[in-house]
Length: 150
Image 1 (spheres, rainbow, N blue to C red):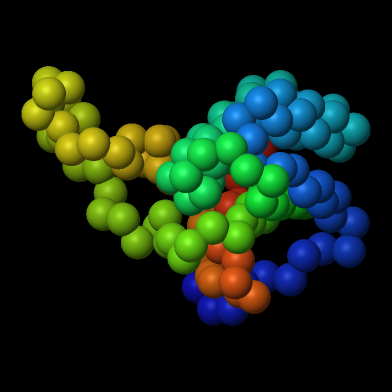
Image 2: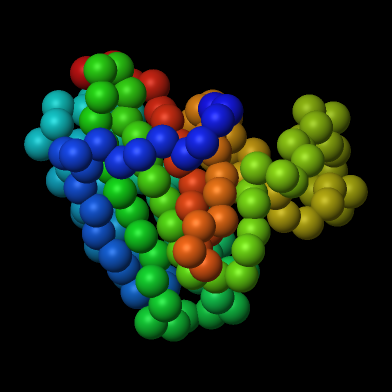
């Protein structure tokens, strides 16, 4: 995506969670419930849940340095053929889209020869090809557009 970050659709659903790994099941339940109510196919709901779990885990572990009561914001909006996920946290600035992509050769290398980190973000980029990052009001905000079949 290019240009300014998109505005949230008026029918978007937003939840704020404490940055605690024990809250992961609640984030998954929010995604599953949203997808069920909006007729989003199971495979797409699972893909969206995997993305949220990866981003949430990174926020808690790397952004906040462990469990805390700091906020992690999830917003979902269903469109015609896609779902918009707006993900936010108040951790120090970090643009996950600025990291160089994991090269195909690196993915085939033995584990001990690979650089540490980045594989989860590589997975997110593959699952949600439409993405934009911005730092707004002391928050990291990531917009991901996922194509889905209904």
